[in-house]
Length: 243
Image (tube, rainbow, N blue to C red; front, side):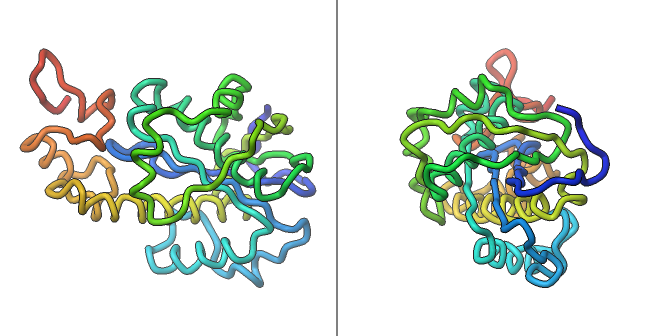
C-alpha cells in the first residue's frame, strides 16, 4: 500500500503502532485501537501526540484515558526467542497481527475497518496468517505480564484493507493513541521483569542499548531476556563481546 506523508481522508479505521522494535532485550509490543468515527480526540485525549514526545507521567495518564475511551483495543506481544527466530521485522508484523486479532475478539463477529499502520510497511499476508497459533514459549513469558493477556479469536479474521502512514504516530490521532498505549504497556512489562533479571538496569533503560545496558552486557553477558541475534548482544567464536 502507498505510504502517506499527510493524514489520509478516511472513515472508521483501526490505528496501529509498536514499541520496542529497536531494543536489545524483551518483547516487541504492538497495540491496535479503534475509536468511534467522530471521536473528539482534542476534547477527550488532550495533549495526545507521538509517545516519544511525552514524559512517563503524561504518557501513563493518556494511556489510561485511551483504554477507557476507545471502543476496543488489542495488545500483541512477540517475545525475544521468536524475534531471534523470525527476525525483528517479521516479529513486528506478527505483534501487530496479534493486536488486531485481540481487538477483533472484543468486537465479535464483525468486518474489520481499514488498518492505519505507523511507518512505511503494511502487514504481509504470510505474517497475518502465521498468528493463528501461539508459539510454545509464549505462556512461560506471559506469566510475568502486569496486565492480563488479550484473548485471541478462535480463527483469524480476514486481513482488512491496510495503509502505511509515514510519521503516523505524529499525524494520525488513533496511531498516536496506539503508540502511547504500546509504550506504556511495554515499559510496565520491562519494569516488572527487572526484578527477575537484576543487574542490567532494565527498569531504567527498558532494554534499549544505553551505555548502562551495554556496560552490563559486557560484564555479565546476556540473560534470557536478550535478543541473541542483535548487534550489541550476540557472541562470536563462543566468546561474548560487543560488536
